[in-house]
Image (cartoon, rainbow, N blue to C red; front, top):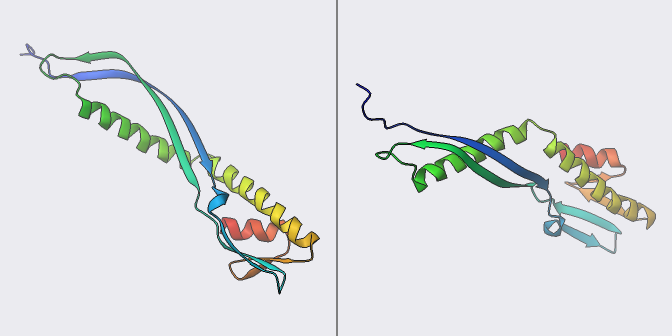
Length: 137
C-alpha cells in the first residue's frame, strides 16, 4: 500500500576548488650570526582549503518529509568528507611539497652564496635533495 511516500531525493552537482598550501610566514627559524647558521625550527603543516559550490537539482520530496536545513548540512558534510578522501589520492599534496622544497631551496642558495650553513632537524642541508628528503619523510 504505497499511498503515502516519505522518500526524498535530489540530484546534486558539486563544483569544488581545492588548494594545498604552506604558510611560510608561520615558519620558525633561528639565525646564528656568530656561527653563520640558519636553523629551520619548524615548517608549518600543509593547509587544505576546500571551496564548494553545491547545486541542488530535481529535488523530490514529500510534503510529510521535506528537506530540512539539517539534511542540507548533512549533505554538505558528506560531500566534504568524500572530497577530502579523494584529495589524498591526487597529486595535490605532492605538488605542494615540491613547491615548498622549491621555495626553501631559495634559502639554501642564499645561505650557500653567503658562506652560511642551513640546518633542519639537526641535519646540515647541503643540497636540494637533502631538503627534499627531510620534507617528505
